[in-house]
Image (tube, rainbow, N blue to C red; front, side, top):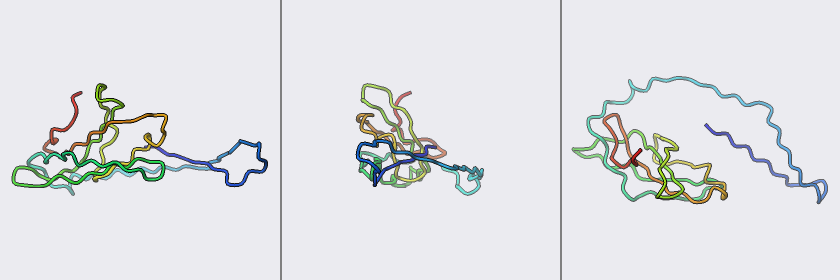
Length: 137
């Protein structure tokens, strides 16, 4: 989990005062464990691949990745998770940065231009396995 706070100063008291302050009084995080296994049917076959349909778009300061859910057919069941991998260069190893249950991911780290550029890979996964798109360890 990441929390991001942003402070801006719309009215400065004096033009030469560069100081902007932010105060957070309280942050509460509550956890509730839910057993979802009884809600999800067992998968019999891994899902199809996502393919080359990954799109990237800026949303404010964040980078949003979206992709279509892979098709379901006689040999492939529905995807339940989408592992998202990122690397600063194709010559470097990929690192898993998330595993959403929907077909989008918001990369908060990509909002800072000092991080540079990234290459992304998203795979489809369910209880029977993955679509085979995951990078080697």
